[in-house]
Structure formats: C-alpha cells, structure tokens
Length: 289
Image 1 (tube, rainbow, N blue to C red):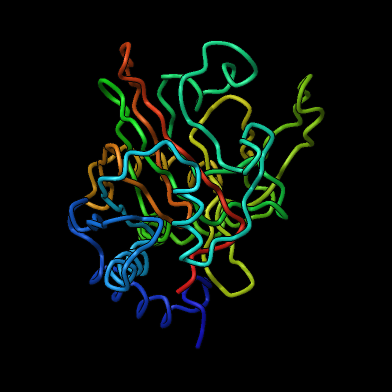
Image 2: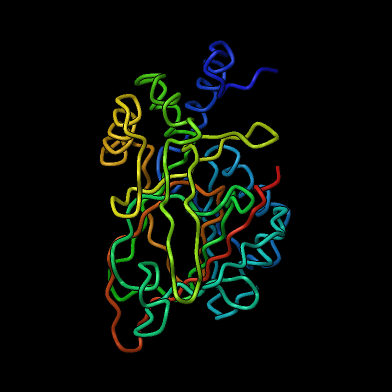
C-alpha cells in the first residue's frame, strides 16, 4: 500500500483524505471519554480513547482523580505502549515535568513555567532527531483560577488542509533545512547545537510527524519563496476558525493523550489556594494501535 503522505501518491492521498475527513470529530466533545481511573483503564475505556486517537491523533480523558501523583501520566501512557520518556533537564527525576508557575530558579525563565501565553507548537521542536517527541500525556491536577485554555489541532489535518491549498507547501515544509533552531548557550544546560530539520517528516513506519513553533524569536526559516509562502499559509490556517481546531480547558482529573498534535495555551491567572498544576510526560514512542 502506498503511503498517502508522498506527493507523488495522489491516488493514495485522495483515498486517505476521504477517510480522514469522514472520521474527523465535529467538536471537542467528541474527544472526551469519561473514565474511572486513568491509571487502570477498563477495556471499554481503553477502546474508546484509542478510537479517538486513530481518528485524530488525540483524546481527552475525564476522571474524578485529583491526586498530585506523577505516576498518573506515566501509568496512563504505559497502557498505550508509551515507555521511553524524554527525561529533559527541567523534568523531575522520574521524567515527568510539573507545569506550573515558578517564581524563581531556572524554570522561571522558560515560558511553560510561567502564566504567559504559549503560541502554537508541537513539543520538542528543538530536540535532535534521536530525541523526537512523538507522543505526550498532559494531566491536570489543578486548573487555574481563570484562563489556561488550549487550542488543539491534529497535525495530519493541518497537512491535509495545506496540501489541498498548494502541494508546494508540503514540499517546502518537508525540506531538511526548512526550520532551524539556532545554537543556544545556557549556564545550566550547556551548549545546545543548532537544530535544522523539516516541519513534516515520516517515521520508519510511515507515520506523519510534525515539528513546528509559531515563535518568531530563536527561529530561522529557510529564506526562499516557497518556504516563506508555506509558513505564511500555516500561520493563516492556525489563526482561522476552521472546525478542526478545538478549544479545551483541562479541569482536575482530565488529561490529554496525543501523538504530539499542534497545541497552544492561553494566558492564565492563579489566586492563593487556586494555582494551576499539570503533569507532562513526553515520549519518544508513538501511541500504539
């Protein structure tokens, strides 16, 4: 069977496109599955989550589990074949990151650990290829007093809409030098070399992966007409009101399980006794099934 993501495989692409659009959720409500305990899903709960992930690379579970326990995202991910955590230097000893406001220390200098807006991105866009982030579990322990909503978009749907607009967008964004993260020197992290790579790529099994950030600082796009036109088209898409962009606010006990889809985060506000805390587990694996 031909891979639908090859630009020369028009027949395979059109067949995949038809099925993708037919299965696409119409609202964020279709992503949500009520579960008892995400650490120990029932067969029906697992099937329901897996079905949504097959349709759009993401699912949201909703439970009454409000414990502050980093085993929750790890045990949830483990039920979907996620085993190899990206134990980055800002994560905890178990490889899970606490996503909350840090008022001081190293984390305070990085946007995820503040209450600021985070623009559209996929996680780990700055990682080298051997540390590609293919899946993620984001579990909410406490929501903010206000704000903190996420927008979510299946990266395969973004590919589809961009290819329909102009196949040259896909060709440009698949170039090995499409997007470069410049070298960074940090007194704690040391030297992180420049990372050039494509926005769209395929893994060994032929699954589509997306590497992207809407940040304008510390990003260098290839300076040719096709790449700049493709980046502009993607920015327009993510700023549009297409029905394939979902709005979600994770409340306590809820979690996002996904194949590293496009997402952002709105600014939020904490109050004393009501401070936002999420656990994030990022994996080199793709969700099985």
